[in-house]
Length: 370
Image 1 (cartoon, helix red, strand yellow):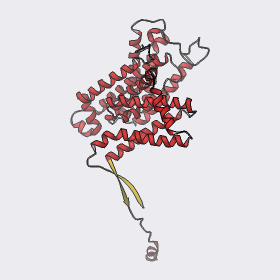
Image 2 (image 1 turned 120 degrees about the vertical axis):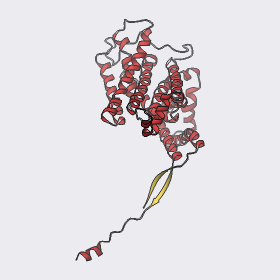
Image 3 (image 1 turned 45 degrees about the vertical axis):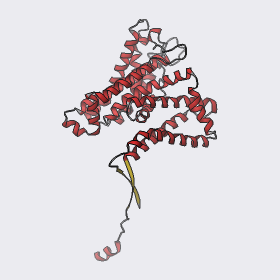
């Protein structure tokens, strides 16, 4: 019998490490062509609709920025967690809680208007996302629970809580019984960047600023060095005097804060009210964005734009070719699979190990027993 074993390479190739995202993208395109062919669609025509047409006009570039902003914000926060070897899988729930917390003022106090409304909403969104992320951090540091499970399960709690709010206490009494809150007043709407050419709002600016600030944090500041040390060698970090529990809270709450900011930016910018669903899965897609960007905040900006294009492309092929919108999810999943696969082969090599099945010599032993 033969079995496969991964053996760590003594030194990884810097060239292939840099090319890994591009190789993964090419492999995704090849697999996508096979997928479209199996669906009975011309792959070249499908790729033109999927990747070219959604960015062929100025207003479509605005839509790309709207889709990319939450992916970049969440992905940048997740990169800090993953560099610290802390696995936050619940950014989707932190996104939702940020949207809920930031909507408190325009929903419960609609008469409150003025220049302070929007900054307070953004602050509430940041605090809401960070506070929700602190729950799995507390459970991990206090009870040593698995943060993957707790953060993931809290996503469903957040989704159900949002659904209960918009169907119950926060439902618009003048909304003809639709499950939604009142429309936000003008003071609670995130301004558009260039209203004459498209809908892109300041959420995209927040994403770019966050990426630059986190890049400075990770590459130029002591806290970033602490994140990298504890992520690569917790024992060395403890010898250096770095606190692992403090790092768990820092990484989770920073990640949650950025996810919460993305949530309230989406609600107050692109949507304008709370609905039962305010995210098409940004929190989960941002995991792909973080790894496609090599956990580098500046690389995450480019990765966020690529993944945002898959959302727009999925909508385009759905309307033009009659293909299910789930095709976008398939593309995202294949991209993550190939990114992780390429990274694995860069860090490890596959070795085939053969071993013989031991023969059972029962007859001699029976004779000896007699």
